Image: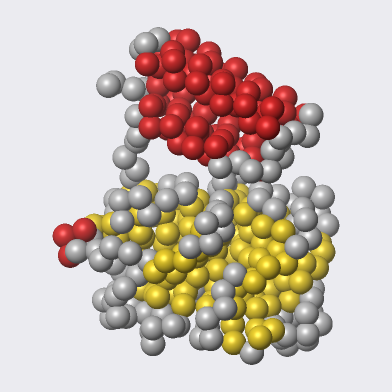
Length: 359
């Protein structure tokens, strides 16, 4: 892992707004698309709540009289730590579309801090006395142990093939990363202060960090290997989450815990880079049939061919054809909804780049 030099630290630019105004405490926000989820003690016990950024509507997800903590969200699924059976903790899941709630991991030792991406759920598990990271595959039903270090590995997050967590192996807490496909583990932070509660989206990892004497939010770019500081407020900013160019966290600047949102001022890629990212993503899809994967690649090759000729109108038409094919594959159940959402989102972002591209 490369050491980050002092000149690599940047203050990220963007806009910030307050999401919750309730006088009780709101904790541990997470975000997916236009939904922010957190746990909230306004009903005298901890429940899961959700806020829709587009509509401005807030809703209560759990009503059980025991505590529900530490939510995570992907697509229509919310997962959390649930204490309804004992004081150890189990993992539960809620389907937003159907309104159904179900247990994921009910074990005689503690399970905490779940995270979800597509059909993979990861969590912190104490079944081996120390705390390890475990993973459950919803599709296959398989459970696997990710970490085996004798010290504690805690609070995982997951995106595509990457799992991140904070690790106490070095006498302080550092952020670590694991590649599911390669099996490689690497250390992300080397600062001697404490780094906790990482979250990951695409090439960005965010966490809470006390190197300045109070807790701030920091971000690391896997590709550029650069760190940047997101918050500078003298009060505490804790437990960040990230989705696309949005980062949320719990913030104590008003004398109680509120949820804040930061939107990154992202430097746009050019269309060739985003199409290359799409090609790389399709290459990494291991759970689709070979013929579907081949057609996806052919259609993206057609897009690249038109873009190389600076024929932007036909490039957009080829991308629209790609989107149409992805939707057809969902209808035929050859692609799942999560796979399709990512491919369509990237294709639509590329169309938008082409329409505004000046290079």
